[in-house]
Length: 400
Image (tube, rainbow, N blue to C red; front, side, top):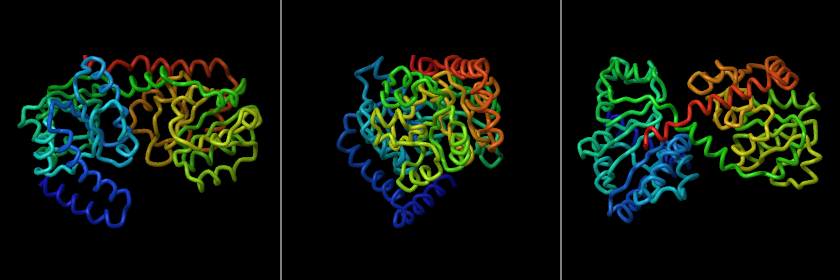
């Protein structure tokens, strides 16, 4: 039944590729993976890391870098399923070979493992492709699930998912994020489990330690109180911008999730105080601006260091973005209400390092409190930073 569903999925992707550039890019990339494996995979001996997309890559990156540090002679194969991961990280220098992972048909799985000949495999977070895992198990390849997290509603714990759950027994070991996941797995007879936490905490600490100074942002911030809004969507901006417009005692750095000309113009039309785009900024213009719009990618993780308070977007849509990326700097973090599937956000809400805002009134109350009460600001910031440090170390537990 599983493989039948996968074949229908493959057919659907082939049809969708006729109309969707994103799906077409993915399907072409999967076809190209065979060429890359024939050309570069013949020597075998790869340690294989698979990430669905960019977020999972960031969780796997500390493991790849730790492996490179401990065993520089090892070759690393990195695969993605989503174009949003592959297209951004296809030139990642930490891997010897980067390609798409072909759809999980039995034939593709056998062919891929035969060509790559991995000596070990690491699947990050939610990746449980049955045919690949079964093929690796039959080939005797040690296979690990890392930074995985489990909930009662997942198919493994439903009566109709018992057959699919057998794939978990084929994993050499599962390194899960929390004790609840371990208990759920124990309930279905999966015992090769260790609770280590999330490697993403190690990654954000690495990013913080390697963050480069940004003179233009530093000049913009000066001695002002600064709210840094990262990965914002329109509902986030519709809350933040009116507050900013009426509170002249603070500055705003706005890094929208979608950097398009239309979206940037929509943002600018709502601003009633001086603003400048980062790509057009000069030392003079940033000093005169009250809002700095980040109209490029790759800077946000370094910009959070200039925040008095951080706002992480996405909480009024499909889900919040990377909360630890902001919290690692020891600043309070604000998020929207859709955070239930994000363990680190839930934990930070409980320890006071994070605050939920649901509408303009709650944003007003929360920001007014944090920006006017130094002790409350310091308590919340310390709670956020301490939480990240307490939860670091998963990479060393997994890789040694």
